[in-house]
Length: 110
Image (cartoon, rainbow, N blue to C red; front, side):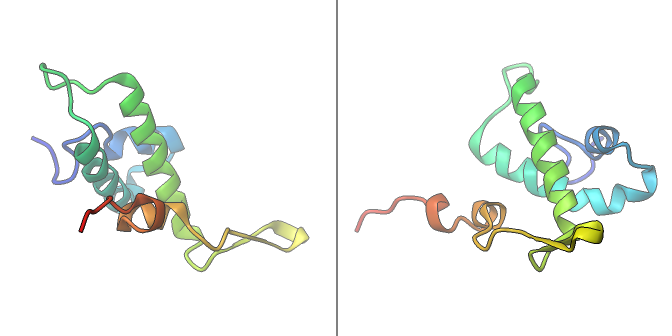
């Protein structure tokens, strides 16, 4: 049985392993994994056996890992040690992707 949001190309377990995290981070990983699975299921489908192409699984793993790490920079600023801060770009492609804004807006006629 899968957890809601886990029925896609990636899973909390896959992303946790990729990032070398403990099981204590599963709750924090659940949101990004569910969002990525929803997004990818809207674009792609598994094969006739219900298996996902390895490249789709890998891409979904990478995107979920990146979104998990984004929690550290919601305001667009990352601490960067003694050198100061690093600024995240103003137009966030991850947010635009999930909210279907800008270049990710579906074309409409009329």
